[in-house]
Every structure is written in structure tokens, then in C-alpha cells.
Image 1 (cartoon, rainbow, N blue to C red):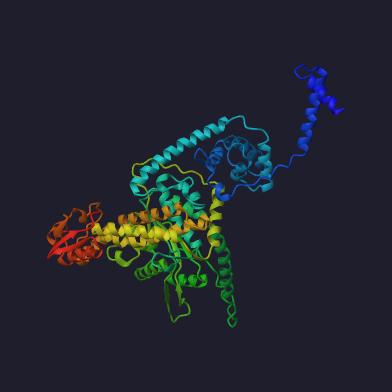
Image 2 (cartoon, rainbow, N blue to C red):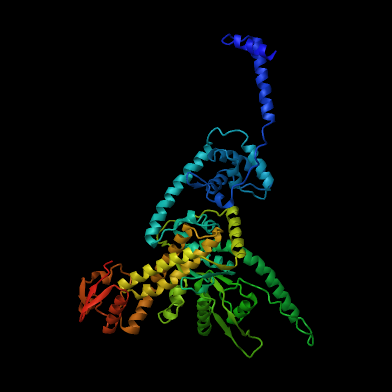
Length: 582
């Protein structure tokens, strides 16, 4: 029968089908399609993109987070409870046209606003049922606006980089640091970044790292953000306020326990035994804290790092008398390397003991207050080289800056970064970072030696340490096993910036101290190299003509150092030949 049907079909090849035959053929094809679809394997479950990769998702270089932020601004703001499903669905419908209708991308970039993963998946499935018909007018407007904004920011970044000597790549920053700069004008981004580094390092107080010299270190960091009155320093405070939330919440509970203990102690009867001190852990302390109370907090911290934030450097200076201020200087210097400090008193009212100081801080202040704190008589005590200084941009005759709003999602990511830093402990090996910083500090040694710049030679050493520790914080926030290239570039950039800012803030005062102390004139702040100016074969007289205010002993030290470094060799009495030309 089947053979006859095939023969009949072969005979009818080339003949037009009747209406009935076309109907039968269509019905058979439909039946086959239904059978095929019935045996199709079930579609694979939607797999979310890895969170680390989700951070870098973008459209034409514009992060989806920026697109979403602009979308909320144009559509009445972020959704509130009761409208979350509807508004997120509309957002997903708009976004699908710029992410190839990919559900996994939408799932990665859509904000949650308290909705469960199942609810968000349902929203994504519903939004992607039909293929997009093109980019909506709303999305077109957002993309054009973001492209124009990015171009303007790039121009501003170039101008800022030319002014401060380094360029900050915001897009390469890890979780927490990137969100700290959300809504911050380009010219203020470095001060804000420098402001949050000490508190980020304080959260990672369980971490230990090996430095280039072989010694192990903890992440001690202190920063001073300086600027004239009304220069916008409060932008740093808004970022710090988000970072210190976990400290504040924990300290509030601890302080409540301590106050209750004090009340019980105060209200006890004459012969009644005093209640035991709860020895609570309080990590946020005011910079005006007394040395005795600070010692108590450090003892109760049991190795954890304390942190202070102060909006006015002048407040710190005024509330510390001469003796107290001198003691605070010692404590700050020791905290950089978790050194040992203590005090002993006969009185039970004063705290006694010895601790290893783990204490980071961020202080905002005017240039005048900075000059009063770091005077010519104390500039050499070592604190100036341990502080990460950042100067606010000059706001003289400038237009009012425009600040963006930091979204709830950005704040949530900062809290996620805090949790990540607190979860890491033990020795963290960063060999690539060590090599990068070692090479950087060697280059600066060569520069300082060629320029006979003693100020740069002093500040380069701890600037390298500060840059290294900032690089470690960056590495911890990436969550990766090995240091990324972006991490290495960030560490070198921070070291360079720290060196430039320290020289700018303290260099002249330190140089004046050198001149007074040794009658040596160390030229400061010039790109001109004394070594390069010397002829191929030179005498001490040639060197003296370039360094006219240097004494004979200083000139001998210079030639001795160059000879030791392999830059020159002695040809005859009082004559030297340059071996190194660059």
C-alpha cells in the first residue's frame, strides 16, 4: 500500500495539487510539528551572570547601572513598595533593546528593591516574551545623555590629571571604591577616594601582608583632606557616612551596654561590690579622645583597628594641649606600623597598660589648620610622611559644583564591600604588587638622586608603603586570588599621588629645616637634574657651580653616592667621568 502511495506521488510530481490535497498536506505538516515540539527537551534554566562579571556589563561603554540611574530620574524616581513589580517590568522592557533581549543580562543588572529572585526572574521572563521592536525614545535620550556626560567627564579627567599629576581610572575600581565616587564631581574624586581608604583598611584589620623589605605589615592608614573654606570637603563626609554604618550600628549597642554598666556602678550601695566592667568593643572614637580613654578602647579592641573621622582639623588642634598633642603625635606615628604604646599611673582613675596601636583616621581641614599642626619645629618628627594628604580643587571664582545622588543600590554595594573586607584574615601574599611598588620606589630613588632632592628621597619611601597598602585594599575588594593589572596600576597611582601631595603640603617646610640644620641648600621642586647638567668629565668645581650653596662635605657625599651607585668613576685626582648618561 505504501509503495503504491509513493508511486502515485512520483507520478504526480510536477502536477499542481488540488485544494483538498493542499489541505491534507498542511494538516500532516502541522501534526509532524506538534510531535516534534512535544519531544523537544525542556529549555535550560536561566543562569545568572557571575556578580564579578555583572559589574563590568555595559552598553557602548556606558555601565547599565548609569543607564538605570538616569532612567529613574526621568520616570519619577525609584519604585516604592506597591509599585515595584510594575516599574521594574517597564524598566526591563526598555533595557531588553540594549542587551540583545538576553534574560541573563537583565537578571544581572536589574535592581531588586527587596523583591525575591523568583519575582525578578518572573519579571524578566514576562518582559522578554516578545522580541524588542527597537530602542525606545526614552532609552535613546538616556544613551545620548550618558555619551555626552561621559565625553565631558573624560575631558575633565584629563584636565584634573594634568593638574595633579596622576589619572584615576574610575571604571577599573572594585566594588565599594567605585560606588564611593558615585555622583562626585571629577575634580573631587581623588580627595573622596583618599578619605575612604583609611576606613576601608580599618575594616580589613585581620589582614597581614609582607612588604618589599620582607617585614610583615598591617593596613595602617591616615588621611588629611585639606582645602579652603567652602571648598566642598563635605562630599568626603557623605561617603564616609555610608562606609561607617556597620561601625556605628555595633558601637551603638556597645555604648548602651557601657552606659548601663556606669549607671549600675554609680547607683550601687556603699558596701556593694561594683559590677564587672563589660569591656565593650567600641571602634569609632572621636579624634578628641583623651589618651587614657584611647588606651582603654585599644585594650578592649583586642587587636581590632579603631577609627576616627573629624570634620575640622582645627578642632583637634584646639582641644589638645601641648602635652596631650605631643602624646597624640606619638600615638599617630606608632599606629602607622602598629607599634607599641602605653602609660602607667598610680591612680585607679587613669587607665594604665601597654598596647599595640591599631588606629586609622580621616580628618578634613583648612590649609591654615594644617600649617598650624605641622609647623617648622615638628615637620621632621615623621608624621607628615605617614599621612595620605589630598587637596580639594581650587574653588576660587568657580561655578557651584553639581553633585549626583548616591543610589540605594550603590550604598548596598558599599556595605557588601565592607562585609568582604571584614571576612578576610591572615597573611595575604601579593608578590606582583610587591614587585610593582619596589620598581616604583627605585625609580623615585634614581630621580631624587639625580636631582639631589632630599625632600623627595624622604617622602618616596613611605609614599610607597601607603600606595602598597591602598593596593592591598583594592586587591581584597576584587575578591580575586591574584592581583590584577588594574590593582598594580592603582597602587602605583596612589603612591605617586601621595608623594606629590606630601611634597606640595610639607616639602618647603622640610627643606627649610634641612637648610637650617646643615647649611645645605637642597634644591626643591625642579624637574631640572644636576647630574644631567654636568659634562661627561667633571670636577668638584663643576658640581660646586651648580650647587653653589653646598658645603665641601655635602659635595663629597654626593660624588660618593653617585660612585657607589655606579653612575660615575674616578679618572684622576679631582676628576670624575659619567658612566650613566640617563
